[in-house]
Picture 1: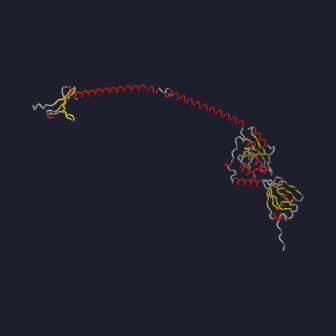
Picture 2: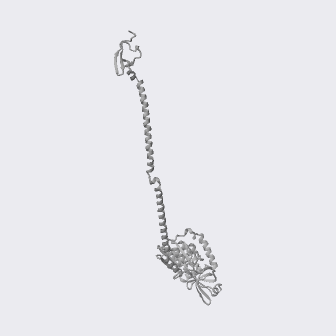
Picture 3: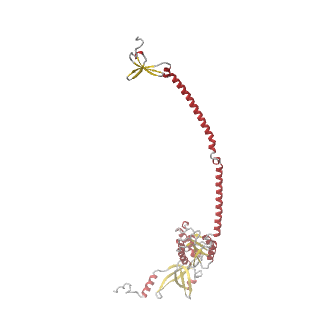
Amino acid sequence: MSQPAPPNSAEHPWPVRAVSTRVAEYIDKLGRVWVEGELAQLTMRPTVAFITLRDPAADMSLSVVCPRDVVLNVEVPLAEGTRVVMFGKPNFHTGRGSFSLRVTEIRTVGIGELLARIERLRRLLAAEGLFDQRLKRPIPFLPTTVGLITGRASAAERDVLSVAKNRWPAVRFAIRHTAVQGPSTVPQVVASLQSLDADPEVDVIVIARGGGSAEDLLPFSDETLCREIAACTTPVVTAIGHEPDNPLCDLVADLRAATPTDAAKRIVPDAAAEQAFVTDQRRRSARALRNWVRREQETIAHWRSRPVLAEPLAALTARADEVHRAIAAARRDVTRHVAAESDHIGHLTARLTTLGPAATLARGYAVVQAVSGSGGTVLRSVHDAPAGTRLRVRVADGAVIARSEGSDEAH
């Protein structure tokens, strides 16, 4: 019975052939696969064709080998940049330690199929909310630095720079030159977006490209680029192609400009127009202020012209005579009433005087009182003063003391 092989370790390493064989066996288990990509390089040989297939959304490529007839039998002539779908079997060459895809069928992806895929992606991104207007970031009114992603020495770059500087000469740009079509567009634009988004001095980012065919604009409908735009914290403005062009990145961006020139107009204000606006507003404000002051002056003049304010004491003066007359009338009435009451009191006093005991005494009458220890009582009968009773006789001018000798009847 054979002993099991020792585990792989530094003391028991595998030879190259063993590693290559195991890798080849593992890859062989993958079976046949369909692969989509862009042709980056095509080299024809008498019997075979060597192809480099590139991923349009990443900096990755794959070596492909196929019979020459497979390439020649494709309905559409293949060229660099053509979008294709291939069917083949992964193969690891143990002798060279290289990997390739041995293809038996190649199909080109037509523009209709590409547009259908873009439409499916559009519905997916819309369902995730990447097009929601509530997520759009506002564009700053006066950005200090504008990040510009565009092709090197392109018409789009010239349009954005010239129009923006004519409108606002103080604007500054941070420019990133990238490919704007082909397989390297997406990774370069994504890298530039990340770089500008991380720059704190960049207030807004513009992605600008001139017009082109639908195939040329396909990278700007790539899912990776769309998601990167949505993830940016800096507002992003897209100016891809012309007015009819509508790649998916336009729907994700915070603002879509019809052309690069329109983008420059959207991101910076026109200095001359703003100055004219400020001048007009100042003029209108001054006119409105003068009109307001004039209206207030007229209101004050109107109130001042009213009698109550023009002569505030006139009402009191007019009423003063009435007050004086009322006071005089009140005094006359009081004096007359007092005089009448005084006369009435005088009459009553005279009557009292006439009817009072003093007047009676003055006519010769006297009041006789029997004096006792506790006081005196007025005599009303001779029987009240028997002989020897001490008497007090009150006359008009005083009183005298007398003693009773009895009544005349007794004598």
